[in-house]
Length: 247
Image (tube, rainbow, N blue to C red; front, side, top):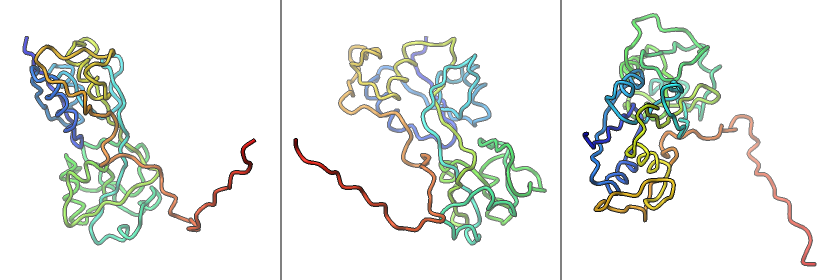
């Protein structure tokens, strides 16, 4: 049996710290990165092209284990000189007069999007949609990580409040649980090499427990609490002094 652990990655996921921890702690088990579009993640995991993967949720729960990790903030990609770039954030209603581009590889699945649908040929990829934005054909709503991956000088990104979001998780087929996957789940969850909930490294494998990776969202692209910039008075709240002394 090939000991290699094949890790599927969808666009926008940066697994660097977990990969580094794995290679330090389980050096005898090679880790191979398998890149895939979100539309192909179920098929590639089910067919065994990859063993475990960072995916866009949801996944079919009858076929896969899935651990939610983080929810990404959503942004609207607009031309650099667009009027919306003057705003700190926008709401769905602000897009009512815009042409909204929805590529074939869209991961937001906006049920009732605002604005007008694009009258041209639907772009197949997010990259093609960003090119159309740069040409002034419309605007695009995407997770922040994808906007950064396709960043250009002629477009800008504005945070979208109260819009759809995309959740990233770790998933693997229920029928293919094994020690390698259990160990990788432990790495992502931040378990140490000596944790009772995870298998110890085989003899000869390095112990990276002194600096384990922590589970959770990378700072880049992580969803933040909605801003209350609109309508704020700007005055800071006061704190009540605590009364009473020692009895």
